[in-house]
Image 1 (cartoon, rainbow, N blue to C red):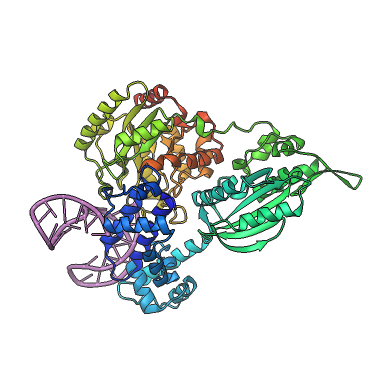
Image 2 (image 1 turned 90 degrees about the horizontal axis):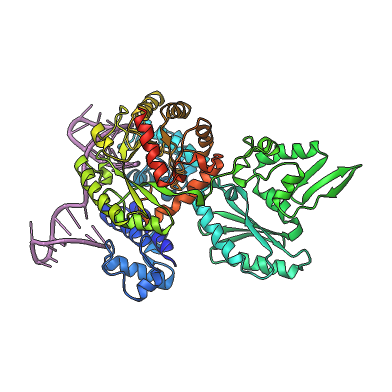
Amino acid sequence: MDKNQVAALLEEIAVLLTLKEGSNSFEIRAYENAARAVGSLEGEIGQLVREGKLKGTPGLGPTLIKRIEEAVTTEHIAFYDELVANTPQVKLDMLRIPGLGPKRINLIYQQVNVTSLAELEQACKDDKVAHLPGFGKKTQDKILQGLEFVSQHADRYLYSVGEAEGERIRAALVEQPGVVRLQIAGSLRRRRETVKDIDMVLSVDDQAGSDVRRALMDFFTSQPSVKAITGKGETKSSVILQSGIAMDLRVVGDSQFPYTLHHFTGSREHHIPLRRRALSMDMTINDYGLFQMKDGQETLIPCKTEADIYAALQMDYVEPELREDTGEIDAAARHALPTLVQESDLRGVLHVHSTWSDGQNSIREMAEACIARGYSYMGLTDHSKLASYANGLHADDLKRQGEEIDRLNEEFAGRFHILKGTECDILRDGTLDFDDETLASLDFVVASIHSNFNLPQAEQTQRMLRAIANPYVDIIGHSTGRILLGRPGYPLDLDQVIEAAAEHGTCIEINAHPSRLDLDWRYVRKARDKGIQIPIDPDAHALVGIDDMRYGIGVARKGWLRASDVLNTKDFEALVTFFHVRRSKK
DNA sequence: GCCGTTTTCGGCCCGACTGTTTTCAGTCG
């Protein structure tokens, strides 16, 4: 078990504990803290355990160290198994409903006696929940609303979950004898923000016998992360993985690979106009091939890669991220597709937290992690004072923090730069949590909404517009506040927001956290078309958070962004000039 | 369950919002 798996297990214990009646909230926090501590350990956890080096790690006391050792040596934690056995599934399901926490869940469970979300829905409709102590009509309606949100997102998983599960199997499979080409397809390859399942396409030599295919399928279905096998044949096998996500593997002869890969990459929406185009050229396309039709005969058009398929259709290659039928077919035919931004185009990261507010690592540690990843600058943005839950900074804290940054910059002279910034709360009325003088003393300002999510749309939009018009606000952080699979964003007229940002030269970030990916890629494209500079920001609260940048790249590419559209592809000097110029214009 | 000490038990982040109450509990960030 690696440290991420151990951390995930500890986090699950924390969740299960919240649902246990009479549990101690500080014990829960201890498990949450321990999960974070384990996640940001440096080094291989098995070795740390063997050498007894966990002792002394903040957040890990004798009990937690014992549990971690148990996890590493036996691959499970008995305490966890026991909690799972004693926690009804419906309680876990209810936790996903916004507005329902452990207290209310336990009350509903005891007094209404529901065993599934469907029963909960019926109980609400039968008006059985509104009469519980502390409940009422509004709460009952809110639960019904929440149930609808949950059912709309049922059976979907974060991109990051699908990526981790898919990649683990891909890495194992690619080493197997007989594999010629292997690629993840489907919505995962298109980098959708959430995915329903994982599709993988594998090719073997055209002459390979069924023994080769069968051996590969045996290997696939016997992977340790496979929880159940739902289908198994020589060309297709289906499994359910540990996280609950379904996965299909298709095995084809190598000459068929590009067509199959293309077919299972989708999207359906992309394929419909593509097939129409093929037909107009007397061709037809399916997962077996691209065929020229003549006198009722179909002749295969040989393609070695997907690019060959598009070329045969007289189009440029369409990157998987763009295959959503949002104009890419026409653009590819006109040779007008953008060259999409890549991770290697990024020069630095903005929007990073440290232990000064709610981050887990010091400024120095965050900076050194950025250096190790090849970045040349880091924009530090700890929370402002209103965010008291996150230990937000006061103006005098900012001043002292600035002095620490000055010292580090001196030390890093020439090879790395830390910019002084803040993630400043946008107050209810759209003014900011710091005065102008404080904001002016910083290199740049990210402004975000962290409170009053439930204002009516018009008021919320006005609040945002006022912040955008503030001359000191350079970047709007996670603009809709959505948590993928968790809650919708606050009501906001994003078209107006984008319009205003364009007018004031204010940037809108792509928050790269896998649970946010906010701004949504559908609006990223709109923002780009208005000429808005879009930074890709990790919103990192720990060293590992910096690696989330790649999720932001996925969103940027889905939003048709070129390197020139992304603020942090600029080098340090150009970035500083950019902030300077936009402030002096105001 | 961890931590730190006023050394062995009490504190652990806390303010705002919502919907319920009629002064507060539950949830959220």
